[in-house]
Amino acid sequence: MIVKENGEVAVKAPKLQEVRWIFEGVPSWFITAMRKLDETSPWWTVTKDVEGTDSDWHGDGEAAIMVFQEQFDSHGWRDHDGWIEQWGQTILVSEPYLVEANALVRLLDFVNKCNLEMKIFGVSNHFPGRTLRIMIWPKEK
Image (cartoon, rainbow, N blue to C red; front, side, top):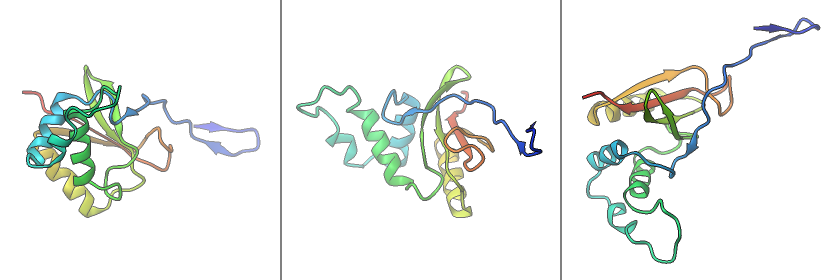
């Protein structure tokens, strides 16, 4: 906590790792989890061998993100999402403004069904003091 000369109190939030773009470096554990949620999605075939692009993110990584976005709309627990490297692994991060009860239930179902771990922090990078940080990663085997 910082007290300014005029008596105002300011809280300095710790600097967290920046979240990288959701389509960049999609980890294999996440692709497996999304296949488990919806193995019949047409995204698994339409993102293969996209002609006329230099992008390296087409394929299963892109398909997994598209399935993820269909399964969990941005009005639930998923907002301002992407990846960080922490604890020796790639972690899914979402920084929503709020999480309502029904969205939390869906999040817990997803984590349990796909054998994942989760933590919710009261500090985030997106809009510190206004958003939460949800971190998801695979359970150790």
